[in-house]
Image 1 (cartoon, one colour):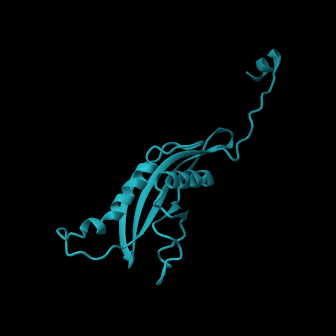
Image 2 (cartoon, rainbow, N blue to C red):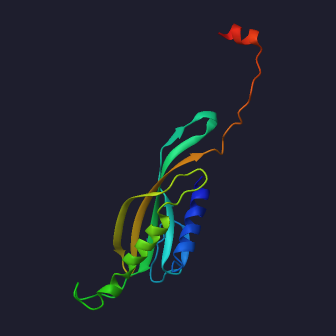
Image 3 (tube, one colour):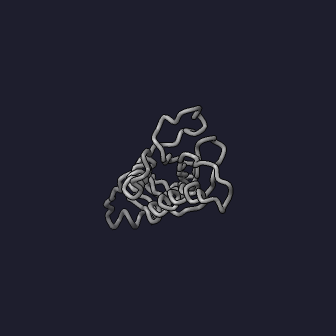
Length: 163
C-alpha cells in the first residue's frame, strides 16, 4: 500500500512540478546535512507517519494514512524587511509550496482516496536550507492479505439443518 502511494505521489509531483529536481523517501535528510547538500534542490521527501489500522472482512485492512511532504529549498538571501525590493525573491519558496499543493489536490489511485491537506509548517532550523512540511491524509484499503471468497454449495436439507 505504501509503495503504491509513494509512487503515485512521486509521479504526480514530477509531472506537475518540473522545477522539483529530486524526490525520495524521507529519512531525516535535512538533519544530517553539514556543509553541502548531497541531492539537488529543490527536493521533495515523502514521509509516512504512523497510522492505525482497522480490520475489514476477508483479511483486508483500512487506514487513514498521513503523509508528510518535506519540501526542501535553499534559503534565499537576507532582506531588509517587507519593503525590501528583494522580498519577492526571498519568498519564492512559498510559490513552490503552492505548486506542490496544487499537484497533490485530488490525487487518488487504486486502493486510496483523494488526498486532503491537513497541516502545514515552515521549519527554519537548518541554516542554508528551508524545509516546509505539508501534511496530507488519504484513506486506503490494503488488500495484500485478502483471502479469496469461496462459495459453498449447500442442499436445502443442509440449510434447514443449520437453522
